[in-house]
Amino acid sequence: MCGIIGYIGPKEVVPVLIEGLRRLEYRGYDSAGLAVVSDRTVSLRRSAGKLSNLEQALADAPLTGRYGIGHTRWATHGRPTEENAHPHRDCTGQIVVVHNGIIENYLDLKHELQRQGHRFVTETDTEIVAHLVEREMRDDGLENAVRRALLQMRGLFALVLISADDPDKIVAVRNGPPIVVGLGDGEFFVASDIPAILSHTRDVVFLGPDHGRASRLPAFHAQRDLRAAHGRSRDDPRAGVSGLRQGLSGRDARHRE
Image (cartoon, rainbow, N blue to C red):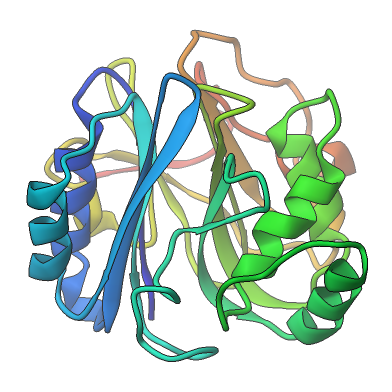
């Protein structure tokens, strides 16, 4: 079980991500990493082994950023190395993804993408997600590129993505493994389990079970600006990746501790 944490808001992002990953250590892992965005550039720090190794990497080369995502990995596809640790990037280095689960058709997709000129640097199934989203990027936002990429993927997975080219936004989607969204005061959290964000908020939303079609998978995207919630129905296929955003309405049940 991999651990996922994401944050967008006024706090310094790296301490939030590290604290969240520490609270997810109970899930077991063999590598850890995080990605943050600053000045429309994505920066990564990753390490094999324990979270303390990642903290040392950050001490040696500190990061600051406006928002970001973090991950603890339990190796399935690929060895437990720094290279295979999440987050993973596309060819441009601007799209970053973390992932819990398995993408069953990743080899077919990888070979297709390689024929189109995409270069892969890891042994993981996760990396193909960043490249699929890169291929699907248009001028309609990261969330819509993710929606198009999902139509090509088979498996059970939870994904959280950011892109420096579509700034101040986090996109999360699930097809099986859980994703929880934390609602704060002008801030949002996404995580694979409540303990990762419980010290920051007790107001959370669970993305519901999937509806059996990629275009209707429960998903969330948050933006730093205070936009109103989409008024789309759960049954509207277009709600797949943009069903929730900052200013979230009360139509989804919230869990309050």
